[in-house]
Image 1 (cartoon, one colour):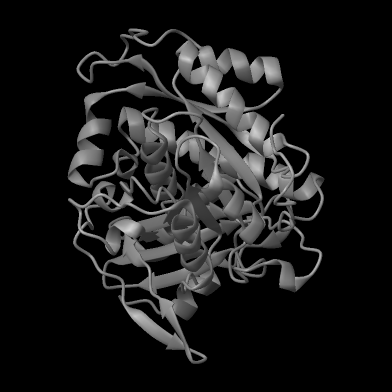
Image 2 (cartoon, helix red, strand yellow):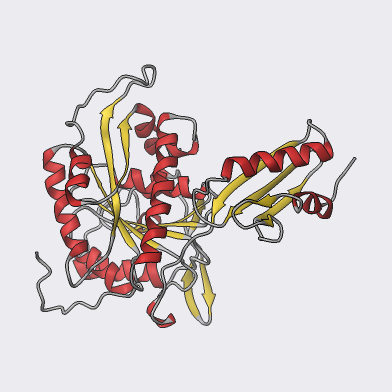
Length: 374
């Protein structure tokens, strides 16, 4: 027997959400409902991220539908939590009106896997049902196109209110923009700082990002013009610092913290991600070899009172995923996929807390003659 969307909706309307004492249809928790011949799929949107009722509500939906239709029906239920948006002092302060949250991903030094973290975090967030964008702000060393296997893609231009606007490339459910789409892969980009910062401004303001829950900005290593241009152009909700555990990387990570916490910038740190925390052979998942030292960033997090969002082991699949354009976060059951799924949940929690507790996000105003050292 074939069932209609109305019949499925009516059945789901009998399921009550414990915390609200209302049914999930009245609470608008069911989205993107699709009814096919032998498959029902929909997105279950919880009132907040990481709801304690997530597993029980999914089971209740599955049981209700199987009781109605039969046990042979295929049911695909994706889950997500409503995104808490930081309040704004005025609409004009936000250059990206459809973007709810902007997250900067930074590192004090190169080679710590910041772009790998950015790519996989974007995919992990998209897999929750969130709308995600990723801006590759590493103008001189763009790597995001390769990591998503879209090196040969070329964004199209669309006229919007008489202005040329860029359509980002979409891959694995993530909207992507990078200077790598506009230059020859083998050419060195020999630009003065002003040219690079102008390119970043254009990517931010002249791109059709649309409605996004999260826009991740993959920053270049260090602290410089690109970072300042970003905070002067858009209101950044928070920053994530990526580092390996070794002392030399930790020393540079501290500089990144100092930049975002500088009085004139004051961007909240959402947390740390420690990459290459240990080496784990995939065939021996319980073995850990601390090649770069143990718990360096974890200890710094405890010392500074900053959340450690997660630790990522060094496994071969991470390198292969980046080289071949298949982000490891795609497979949630793998070691890395599971790690990024947990990190994504921690990021959402930290961001929600920041948006509820802290003041309105605003664009940073920096005196060009003032020093930002601390």
